[in-house]
Length: 290
Image (tube, rainbow, N blue to C red; front, side, top):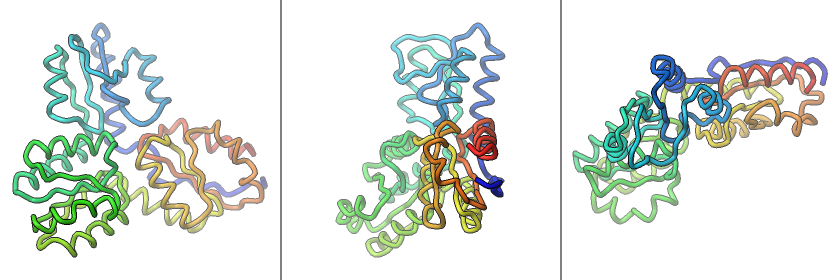
């Protein structure tokens, strides 16, 4: 590899919601050294960060115990009102670190449900953020569905036509192309389609900038967890513009080292839950010839 030109995207790494969640969790432990501190589910989609928090004594739990004491953190993806109740009933103090952008989507979905719209959530059904949005809207309506493609929506076609009014919200890390396809389809079925484009600004800016960087790069490196929706979407988008690889950290560069031979321009971007230290290690390894 002959000394390539490496360019890092400005909007790479922690978004403000993730930064706030990680910093607040650490601060809570610092201020309450003798209290048990738990997070329900992984705080963010990044193994290194989860290990770092565990080393500080902040434990990740996946089920709510019948009895507990100390603080239980709600992660940035949010939770259903029922989960909040169960945590309180178990005896925990709840600290809600739901990302403010995710809170807005929940609120929009609730408003649509309350106003008798057929609610369509554009997102992945099994993603924790989407499950929490749906659970909040479900309290006010039986007509709440989740889809990322037209095919997934087709089974609700008759119900949508009968309802006539459709309201749309979007998982914060979705691609705008998915939203557009679904909205175009809904416009053929419903008399009224009310759309809230709730893709967060950080995601939009990250995707837009990465596309521009990809256009002038021979190879794009996307850094971040394979479990992270916004990171996998970034990699999907960029593959249309240039050769793209998606790695979790610098250790995975080894298997792609042949791609780096004779490459002049390398662009690097990273997902919203990727710490700066991991991005730096990737850059260092590429600069060192891998």
